Length: 75
Image (tube, rainbow, N blue to C red; front, side):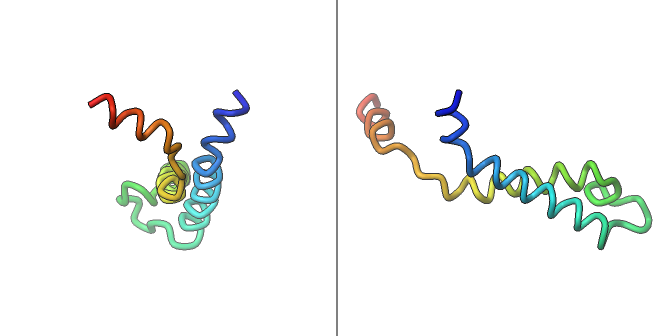
């Protein structure tokens, strides 16, 4: 369990930072009419920010070269 958490730490950090940024965006900018799909509710904005933050920092995750070469040899 610890190894899995350590391997995915960037995703968790990105999700936490994105969630905070999404909530702050809703609070400061938001949607005055209530028709915006993402920014009309704080939950939507927070979840969207968490997803985007996890995806953004997930791009910087280094893959294990051993597993990648193993998969290429299987093909």
